[in-house]
Image (cartoon, rainbow, N blue to C red; front, side, top):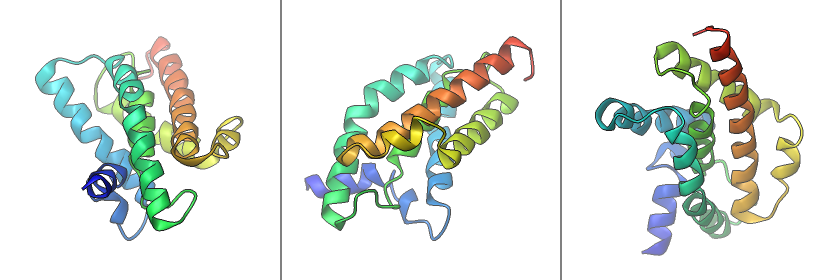
Length: 155
């Protein structure tokens, strides 16, 4: 039962089984609950930073469990790390609109793929911590750039 829950969360309810661009699908899927929370619960962008940190222990647990089960250090089917990273990036938005959400998505994916220091170094940490830490840092970089863009009314 615990492995089923870990796989459900780790693959973000099946997004990790996409035939290609699994990280992109995971990041896009993170936007669905974000949109619902903004639309129906009145969340502000900074709430997603809190959500990312609050959900991080669950993401670490799920990623660790799935990685052990499939015998890989960072299996590509684990996309919950993209979810928490994408939420972290959303936290930097000065406003919630289609431009800020698109910018958050592009910035997160850019930093997640590029992996500037210390993003690459963080993925070397063991287990689910390493799987998630690099994406949280990429999300933080994205949030800072998104915040700076908001300061200049770019979106």
